[in-house]
Length: 278
Image 1 (cartoon, rainbow, N blue to C red):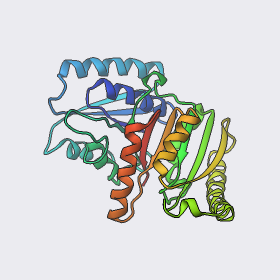
Image 2: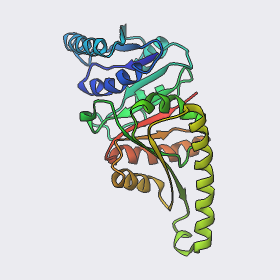
Image 3: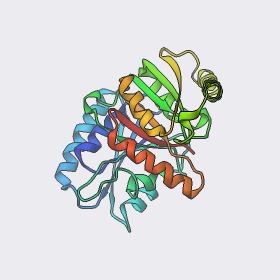
Protein backbone atom coordinates (compact mmCIF):
# COMPACT_ATOMS: atom_id res chain seq x y z
CA UNK A 1 0.00 0.00 0.00
CA UNK A 2 1.08 3.55 -0.73
CA UNK A 3 0.52 6.16 1.98
CA UNK A 4 0.41 9.86 1.05
CA UNK A 5 0.70 12.64 3.62
CA UNK A 6 -1.33 15.46 2.01
CA UNK A 7 -1.45 18.95 3.57
CA UNK A 8 -4.23 20.20 1.27
CA UNK A 9 -1.96 22.36 -0.90
CA UNK A 10 -1.48 22.26 -4.66
CA UNK A 11 2.10 21.17 -3.97
CA UNK A 12 0.79 18.02 -2.31
CA UNK A 13 -1.30 17.46 -5.45
CA UNK A 14 1.96 17.38 -7.43
CA UNK A 15 3.43 14.85 -5.00
CA UNK A 16 0.19 12.87 -5.24
CA UNK A 17 0.95 12.13 -8.92
CA UNK A 18 3.98 10.11 -7.81
CA UNK A 19 1.93 8.35 -5.13
CA UNK A 20 -0.75 7.50 -7.71
CA UNK A 21 1.74 5.96 -10.15
CA UNK A 22 3.33 4.00 -7.29
CA UNK A 23 -0.05 2.73 -6.11
CA UNK A 24 -0.80 1.48 -9.63
CA UNK A 25 2.20 -0.89 -9.30
CA UNK A 26 1.06 -2.36 -5.95
CA UNK A 27 -0.66 -5.71 -5.66
CA UNK A 28 -3.48 -4.23 -3.58
CA UNK A 29 -3.61 -1.01 -5.71
CA UNK A 30 -4.49 1.06 -2.63
CA UNK A 31 -3.68 4.70 -1.91
CA UNK A 32 -4.16 5.80 1.70
CA UNK A 33 -4.26 9.60 1.90
CA UNK A 34 -3.72 11.18 5.32
CA UNK A 35 -4.65 14.81 5.99
CA UNK A 36 -4.26 16.46 9.39
CA UNK A 37 -6.86 19.13 10.14
CA UNK A 38 -4.40 21.82 11.25
CA UNK A 39 -6.38 24.77 9.85
CA UNK A 40 -3.71 25.79 7.30
CA UNK A 41 -5.99 25.05 4.33
CA UNK A 42 -9.80 25.61 4.37
CA UNK A 43 -11.79 22.33 4.50
CA UNK A 44 -13.67 23.09 1.25
CA UNK A 45 -10.38 23.37 -0.67
CA UNK A 46 -9.15 20.10 0.84
CA UNK A 47 -12.42 18.40 -0.12
CA UNK A 48 -12.14 19.70 -3.68
CA UNK A 49 -8.56 18.43 -4.02
CA UNK A 50 -9.53 15.04 -2.62
CA UNK A 51 -12.48 14.80 -4.99
CA UNK A 52 -10.16 15.44 -7.94
CA UNK A 53 -7.64 12.90 -6.64
CA UNK A 54 -10.42 10.32 -6.21
CA UNK A 55 -11.31 10.75 -9.88
CA UNK A 56 -7.70 10.24 -10.91
CA UNK A 57 -7.52 7.09 -8.77
CA UNK A 58 -10.59 5.74 -10.57
CA UNK A 59 -8.86 6.33 -13.91
CA UNK A 60 -5.85 4.28 -12.71
CA UNK A 61 -8.04 1.60 -11.10
CA UNK A 62 -6.57 2.49 -7.70
CA UNK A 63 -8.60 2.34 -4.49
CA UNK A 64 -8.70 5.80 -2.88
CA UNK A 65 -8.77 5.72 0.94
CA UNK A 66 -8.95 9.25 2.41
CA UNK A 67 -8.51 9.87 6.13
CA UNK A 68 -9.01 13.30 7.69
CA UNK A 69 -7.30 13.33 11.07
CA UNK A 70 -8.07 15.70 13.98
CA UNK A 71 -4.94 17.55 15.06
CA UNK A 72 -3.31 15.98 18.11
CA UNK A 73 -0.30 17.33 19.96
CA UNK A 74 1.43 18.04 16.62
CA UNK A 75 1.06 17.30 12.91
CA UNK A 76 4.01 14.93 13.00
CA UNK A 77 2.70 12.92 15.96
CA UNK A 78 -0.77 12.75 14.44
CA UNK A 79 0.62 11.38 11.18
CA UNK A 80 2.94 9.00 12.99
CA UNK A 81 0.03 7.46 14.89
CA UNK A 82 -1.95 7.01 11.66
CA UNK A 83 0.81 5.39 9.60
CA UNK A 84 0.58 1.59 9.76
CA UNK A 85 3.68 -0.36 10.82
CA UNK A 86 4.19 -2.22 7.54
CA UNK A 87 7.62 -2.68 5.88
CA UNK A 88 5.87 -3.45 2.57
CA UNK A 89 4.12 -0.07 2.49
CA UNK A 90 5.66 3.23 1.37
CA UNK A 91 5.02 6.66 2.86
CA UNK A 92 5.44 9.60 0.48
CA UNK A 93 5.20 13.30 1.33
CA UNK A 94 6.43 16.64 0.01
CA UNK A 95 8.77 19.32 1.27
CA UNK A 96 9.08 22.95 0.21
CA UNK A 97 10.42 26.25 1.48
CA UNK A 98 7.80 28.18 3.43
CA UNK A 99 7.78 31.91 4.21
CA UNK A 100 10.52 33.01 6.66
CA UNK A 101 12.22 29.61 6.41
CA UNK A 102 15.05 28.88 4.00
CA UNK A 103 15.29 25.11 4.50
CA UNK A 104 13.49 22.41 2.57
CA UNK A 105 14.18 19.51 4.90
CA UNK A 106 16.05 20.36 8.10
CA UNK A 107 13.66 20.85 11.02
CA UNK A 108 10.53 20.09 8.96
CA UNK A 109 7.74 17.58 9.49
CA UNK A 110 9.09 15.74 6.45
CA UNK A 111 12.47 15.25 8.14
CA UNK A 112 10.76 13.86 11.25
CA UNK A 113 8.80 11.42 9.08
CA UNK A 114 12.07 10.30 7.49
CA UNK A 115 13.31 9.32 10.95
CA UNK A 116 10.39 6.94 11.49
CA UNK A 117 10.98 3.20 11.48
CA UNK A 118 7.42 2.17 10.55
CA UNK A 119 7.89 1.84 6.78
CA UNK A 120 10.12 3.14 3.98
CA UNK A 121 9.74 6.90 3.48
CA UNK A 122 10.20 9.11 0.40
CA UNK A 123 10.19 12.92 0.67
CA UNK A 124 9.67 14.71 -2.64
CA UNK A 125 10.72 18.15 -3.87
CA UNK A 126 8.88 18.83 -7.13
CA UNK A 127 10.35 21.26 -9.66
CA UNK A 128 8.79 19.75 -12.80
CA UNK A 129 5.06 19.29 -12.08
CA UNK A 130 4.51 18.76 -15.81
CA UNK A 131 6.02 15.27 -15.46
CA UNK A 132 2.86 14.29 -13.57
CA UNK A 133 4.86 11.95 -11.34
CA UNK A 134 5.98 9.77 -14.23
CA UNK A 135 9.75 10.28 -14.79
CA UNK A 136 11.67 8.20 -17.33
CA UNK A 137 15.29 9.17 -16.59
CA UNK A 138 16.55 8.50 -13.05
CA UNK A 139 19.81 9.68 -11.48
CA UNK A 140 20.81 7.60 -8.47
CA UNK A 141 23.81 9.14 -6.65
CA UNK A 142 25.21 6.79 -4.02
CA UNK A 143 27.87 9.03 -2.50
CA UNK A 144 27.68 9.14 1.29
CA UNK A 145 25.11 6.32 1.41
CA UNK A 146 26.76 3.17 2.70
CA UNK A 147 23.97 0.65 2.36
CA UNK A 148 23.45 -1.83 -0.50
CA UNK A 149 20.69 -2.19 -3.04
CA UNK A 150 18.21 -3.48 -0.45
CA UNK A 151 17.85 0.09 0.89
CA UNK A 152 17.00 1.40 -2.59
CA UNK A 153 14.81 -1.52 -3.69
CA UNK A 154 11.42 -0.25 -2.33
CA UNK A 155 11.71 2.85 -4.50
CA UNK A 156 13.30 1.39 -7.64
CA UNK A 157 10.73 -1.39 -7.94
CA UNK A 158 7.91 1.16 -8.02
CA UNK A 159 9.65 3.41 -10.55
CA UNK A 160 11.01 0.63 -12.79
CA UNK A 161 7.92 0.03 -15.02
CA UNK A 162 8.21 3.50 -16.59
CA UNK A 163 11.98 4.09 -16.57
CA UNK A 164 14.04 4.54 -19.72
CA UNK A 165 17.49 5.30 -18.23
CA UNK A 166 18.99 4.74 -14.79
CA UNK A 167 22.31 6.40 -13.99
CA UNK A 168 24.11 4.83 -11.03
CA UNK A 169 26.55 7.48 -9.85
CA UNK A 170 29.40 7.31 -7.34
CA UNK A 171 31.32 10.51 -6.61
CA UNK A 172 34.54 9.83 -4.73
CA UNK A 173 34.97 12.83 -2.44
CA UNK A 174 38.56 13.88 -1.74
CA UNK A 175 40.16 16.63 0.29
CA UNK A 176 40.25 19.88 -1.78
CA UNK A 177 43.91 20.38 -0.81
CA UNK A 178 44.81 16.88 -1.95
CA UNK A 179 42.80 16.80 -5.16
CA UNK A 180 45.09 18.98 -7.37
CA UNK A 181 48.13 16.86 -6.42
CA UNK A 182 46.65 13.44 -7.14
CA UNK A 183 48.42 11.37 -9.79
CA UNK A 184 46.60 9.60 -12.62
CA UNK A 185 47.34 6.26 -10.95
CA UNK A 186 45.74 7.42 -7.70
CA UNK A 187 42.65 8.65 -9.53
CA UNK A 188 42.33 5.36 -11.43
CA UNK A 189 42.56 3.39 -8.18
CA UNK A 190 39.85 5.50 -6.53
CA UNK A 191 37.59 5.23 -9.58
CA UNK A 192 38.05 1.46 -9.70
CA UNK A 193 36.83 1.19 -6.12
CA UNK A 194 33.80 3.22 -7.12
CA UNK A 195 33.09 1.04 -10.15
CA UNK A 196 33.43 -2.11 -8.02
CA UNK A 197 30.76 -0.82 -5.65
CA UNK A 198 28.45 0.20 -8.48
CA UNK A 199 28.90 -3.17 -10.16
CA UNK A 200 27.84 -4.94 -6.97
CA UNK A 201 24.71 -2.78 -6.68
CA UNK A 202 24.00 -3.23 -10.40
CA UNK A 203 24.14 -7.03 -10.06
CA UNK A 204 21.87 -6.93 -7.00
CA UNK A 205 19.40 -4.74 -8.90
CA UNK A 206 19.39 -7.08 -11.91
CA UNK A 207 18.74 -10.07 -9.64
CA UNK A 208 15.97 -8.27 -7.75
CA UNK A 209 14.10 -6.82 -10.74
CA UNK A 210 14.74 -9.59 -13.25
CA UNK A 211 14.51 -8.58 -16.94
CA UNK A 212 13.86 -4.85 -17.22
CA UNK A 213 13.39 -2.48 -20.14
CA UNK A 214 15.53 0.46 -19.02
CA UNK A 215 19.21 1.04 -19.73
CA UNK A 216 21.56 1.31 -16.74
CA UNK A 217 24.79 3.32 -16.96
CA UNK A 218 27.43 3.48 -14.22
CA UNK A 219 29.35 6.70 -13.60
CA UNK A 220 32.26 7.36 -11.22
CA UNK A 221 33.72 10.83 -10.70
CA UNK A 222 36.23 12.43 -8.31
CA UNK A 223 35.43 15.76 -6.68
CA UNK A 224 36.02 17.72 -3.49
CA UNK A 225 32.30 18.57 -3.17
CA UNK A 226 30.02 15.70 -4.12
CA UNK A 227 26.86 17.82 -4.02
CA UNK A 228 28.13 20.15 -6.76
CA UNK A 229 29.13 17.15 -8.87
CA UNK A 230 25.68 15.61 -8.48
CA UNK A 231 23.98 18.83 -9.57
CA UNK A 232 26.20 19.07 -12.66
CA UNK A 233 25.47 15.45 -13.55
CA UNK A 234 21.72 15.97 -13.17
CA UNK A 235 21.90 18.94 -15.53
CA UNK A 236 24.22 17.28 -18.06
CA UNK A 237 22.28 14.03 -18.18
CA UNK A 238 18.93 15.85 -18.25
CA UNK A 239 17.68 13.64 -15.42
CA UNK A 240 14.00 13.93 -14.61
CA UNK A 241 14.26 12.50 -11.09
CA UNK A 242 17.10 12.17 -8.59
CA UNK A 243 17.02 9.97 -5.49
CA UNK A 244 19.27 10.67 -2.51
CA UNK A 245 19.55 8.44 0.55
CA UNK A 246 19.52 9.65 4.14
CA UNK A 247 21.87 7.46 6.17
CA UNK A 248 21.78 6.62 9.86
CA UNK A 249 25.34 7.20 11.00
CA UNK A 250 26.83 9.37 13.75
CA UNK A 251 25.07 12.63 14.59
CA UNK A 252 27.99 14.70 13.32
CA UNK A 253 27.92 12.91 9.97
CA UNK A 254 24.15 13.30 9.66
CA UNK A 255 24.43 17.04 10.24
CA UNK A 256 27.15 17.33 7.60
CA UNK A 257 25.36 15.13 5.09
CA UNK A 258 22.02 16.90 5.69
CA UNK A 259 23.67 20.26 4.91
CA UNK A 260 24.88 18.86 1.58
CA UNK A 261 21.43 17.44 0.80
CA UNK A 262 19.88 20.81 1.68
CA UNK A 263 22.13 22.46 -0.91
CA UNK A 264 21.07 19.94 -3.57
CA UNK A 265 17.39 20.50 -2.70
CA UNK A 266 17.79 24.25 -3.23
CA UNK A 267 19.57 24.01 -6.58
CA UNK A 268 18.21 20.83 -8.15
CA UNK A 269 17.28 21.11 -11.85
CA UNK A 270 14.93 18.11 -11.59
CA UNK A 271 12.48 16.48 -9.20
CA UNK A 272 14.26 14.98 -6.23
CA UNK A 273 13.33 12.35 -3.68
CA UNK A 274 15.05 11.92 -0.31
CA UNK A 275 14.59 8.34 0.81
CA UNK A 276 15.11 6.23 3.86
CA UNK A 277 14.43 2.52 3.91
CA UNK A 278 13.95 0.36 7.01
